[in-house]
Amino acid sequence: MMSTESLSESGDQPCIRLEPLKNTHLPGKTTPTGGSCVVFTGSSPKVTANGVHDIEDRILRITGYYGYNPGYSSHRREDGSESHAETPGSETSGESRSYQTCTNTALKVLGGLLVVLCISSSWVGTTQVVKLTFQSFSCPFFISWFSSNWNILFFPIYYSVHVVTTREKQTPIQKFRECSKLFGEDGMTLKLFVKRTAPFSILWTLTNYLYLLALKKLTATDVSALYCCHKAFVFLLSWIVLKDRFMGVRIVAAIMAITGIVMMAYADGFHGDSFVGVALAVGSASTSALYKVLFKMFLGSANLGEVAHFLSTMGFFNLIFISCVPLILYFTKVEQWGSLSSLPWGYLCGLAGLWLVFNILVHVGVVLTYPILISIGTLLSVPGNAAVDVLKHEVIFSMVRLAATCIICLGFLLLLLPEEWDSVTLRFLSTIADKKSEEHGEELTESSIHTRSRSRANGTVSIPLA
Image (tube, rainbow, N blue to C red; front, side, top):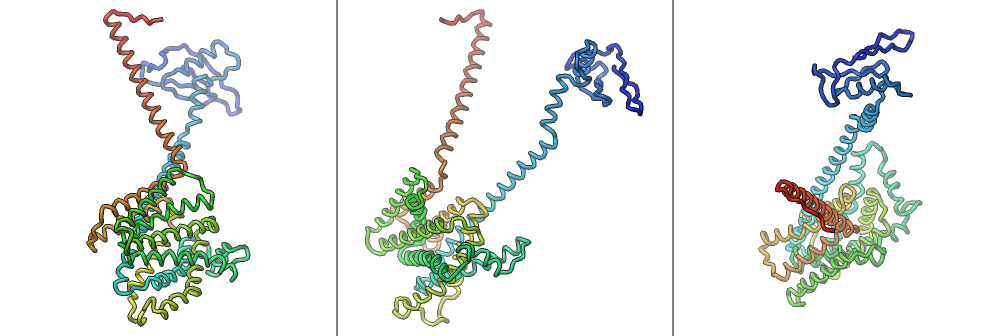
């Protein structure tokens, strides 16, 4: 073995004495004593398991290799580079980052599933409560106006959650002015208030009013299925107005939605309340699509606080400017309320609360989770309403209506495909094809090797043809 003398405190170089190799062994073999070899680099010994570096260092020292430094053999440099590249700290940090990413993704998906369940439940509850309210109070515009007034609570709810979840201390007026930049750098003025809010408030009111009118003519399942056609209308308007990317699969989905609408209207022969109800439901889906496209055009970059501010502003506009419409309908005897004490306030408040919860979940869920899950939550309201109609109201659906509902839902799912779905699918299929070809090549190689071994064992030789 190689030994050194003790170093002096003055920093002199150590004396190295060579001794004969007594326990020489081959690389990869253990020493006869079962121990390990000690290699010295400078003054720090290093223990190796196979002794390869120790033998190489001795040979290079004896031959006087120019520029050689003890302890820096080729094997040692490779080991050092590998240990530097893959340090335990880097592996631990990489594992922790991947674990944190997986945890965040799992939490986001679980939160999204919970939001999906809440959205579908709130929308089913809203639709069914409307049907119950119509049994004792058949005034759809008053119900729509009363429910829209609850949008005023959007910003107070947002501010309360904001104060609880953040350390930033702002007064409600300061936060309101900060979110008012949505209307311009100067904030909200009366002119901008009317100009920006009036179109959206009118479309909002028409969407809700037509939806309620359709519920008076059709079942909750049919109306919720027809309302899902708004997704196809959003695509068509975005393609025409916003110049969004053309996608053939979405055109097919739009055609399927239109086919489902026609089949739904044909179910009762294009006459009676069924046809009128289908027209009203399609009108509600159309105004909803127009509202969403305009919202994306003018307010697409708004954050959650600005959206809450805008919806509360719409509630104020509805309370101030649209309150005259229920009064006109009342005095013209189109909608008879009766006395205020006779109104079903329990149903009205429950309906308005469910509608408010649904709108909050839709707007907040886009920020908290994946937007596709929000759309799926709206789609799940169709089977939810169907279950309630069958179990509670004992509704019997015809085959034509079931087929129309399935076609509309399938078209809705096709509209949820991402823009790059075709290229992603082709890459996935090509990857599968490459794997199959590699497995087939490995099988051919193994079979050829097996054939050659058999021919050699039998004493036969295969001669390749020219």
